[in-house]
Length: 195
Image 1 (cartoon, rainbow, N blue to C red):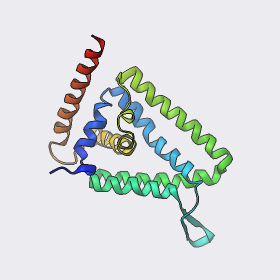
Image 2 (tube, rainbow, N blue to C red; image 1 turned 90 degrees about the vertical axis):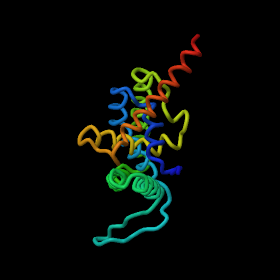
Image 3 (cartoon, helix red, strand yellow; image 1 turned 30 degrees about the horizontal axis):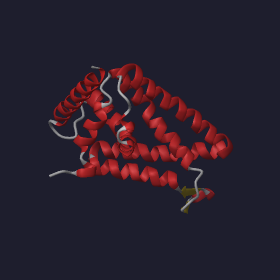
Image 4 (spheres, one colour; image 1 turned 180 degrees about the vertical axis):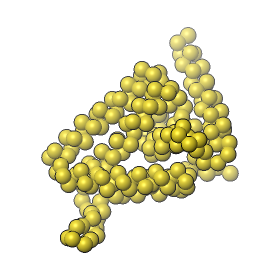
């Protein structure tokens, strides 16, 4: 039975097929979460849906930054409860941090900082694909899936390298087979174009 939108193996294999070079993986590990974070900084300047008053006259504004952090967090928890819960915490920490930075910078400086950070991070990732992966980024084939999966993918890669994390037994073996099959098909297609 297909899990559709929440099919972790399918998503992980799709994203992994575009990120198999170790240097490209390192580059993405460094730059993916800052892209999410700075995107949330920009969304902090959107209209507020509602506010929550706290002690000491502090107010929490719920806007598009919160909405996107919530979407990512819920998606990750539903997809893979353990790693997804950690990813959800990171999403909300990014939301809190983005509010802090946005309030300190203000819009006139904030959007410039976000633009500079986004250009820097995206350039790094495109260079990673061009110089090391030798394959176009996943976002060119599936924009929504690439944006949604990238933070979870790099987190799961780090967890796997550091502590041998697997969402369930055999996950990495099955996904590795799918990635290898996809990469083989891509290389064959690429060779046919050049002959």
